Amino acid sequence: MRRILMVSHCILNPYSKAVGLLREEKVKAARKIIKALLDDLETGIIQLPCPELLYKGLDRKPASRESYDKPEFRHICRSIAEQAVEIAVKYEHRGVGIVAYLGVEGSPSCGVEWTHFKIEKPDRGRGVFTEILCETMSKAGIKISLLGLPEKEKYGSLEELLRKLKALR
Figure 1: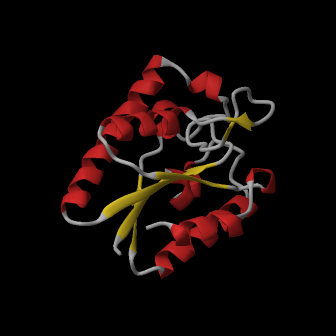
Figure 2: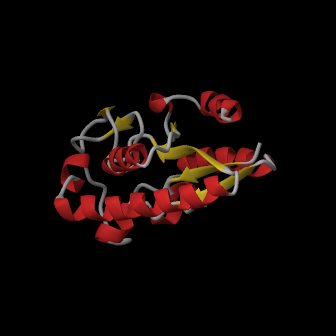
Figure 3: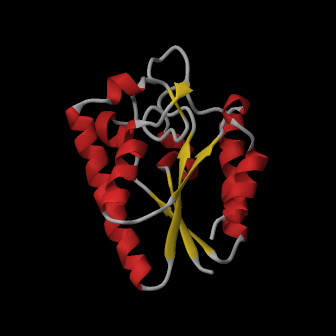
C-alpha cells in the first residue's frame, strides 16, 4: 500500500537545527530512519517547513517550549499545519494515505512525547507545532499516527521506532 509520512524539517536537513544542537549522533539517528524509509518503495516522504527557522532564523539559540508558545509562533505553526492538511487531502483523493507524522523527541516545537517546557530538562508532552498539527488534522477528519525520532537514548530506541514505522499501514 502506498503511503506517505510527513517529517520534521531537521530530520532531512540537520543544518536547520538551533546553534549548537547539530551533533553527529543526532545526524546518524536521523539518517538510519531516513535510509529505512527510502528503502521502502511504498513510502513517500514530505518534509514540512521548520517553524523555528521561520520564526527566529538559522542563528537561533536553543530554546524551551515556553519561549516558543507565543501567538506569533502559533500563527506560523497553524499556517504550516493548514498547508499539511491541504496536501494530505490531495494525496488521499489519489489513493495515497498520509499515515504518520515523524517529529523529533525533545524538540520544543516538534516533540511528540517529549519536549522541553523549560530549557533545563525534558518532560513528557508535545511540542507547540505537534500540538497544532494534531488539532488541525483532527478538525479536518484526518487520522495519522504520531511518531518521534529519539535522537538520544533517554527518548527511546531507534529499533522501536523502526518497528513502529514498518507496522504503519
